[in-house]
Length: 190
Image 1 (tube, rainbow, N blue to C red):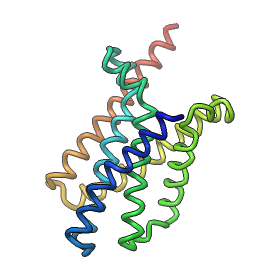
Image 2 (image 1 turned 90 degrees about the vertical axis):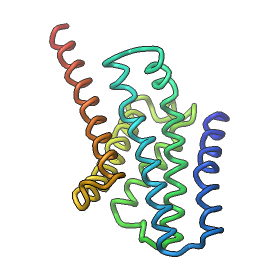
Image 3 (image 1 turned 60 degrees about the vertical axis):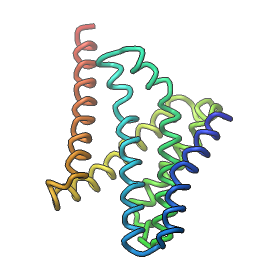
Image 4 (image 1 turned 180 degrees about the vertical axis):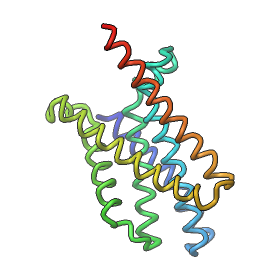
């Protein structure tokens, strides 16, 4: 639990410190807030994609590196929550109405996942309920990210940020689908 709290605190500080410093120095104009919102969202997406592909990547090509990623996946999730909290604070400061129903659901799932990422939570919830919550949260976050990035990509397909984020998202989905089919074939044979 101590390590989880440390990861959350450090990530929130590392993500929020520079953002708040930038806004303090540059001001909270619409342009500056928009930039910080985009940067925090992009950072969160990159951490999310790492979490999203960790298990499937290990299933497809197990190595010391992928096993290390898998062993630390919880901490990546906690780090993601830290970045997303910074993003939420920015939304509130910018008055961007972060409390639309989809946003509320995603943030509630994110917080539930964060609170159940500490050592005793899986035992209290039961492993099956813990997996259900985290799988539901993983896919809900994914849908929110993919809709957001996809709609931005469709508006400006050659954008130097949204094009690579869209490609990375598609690669992540392909990795997950490939691992699913590999697992399914193995189960059919066994």
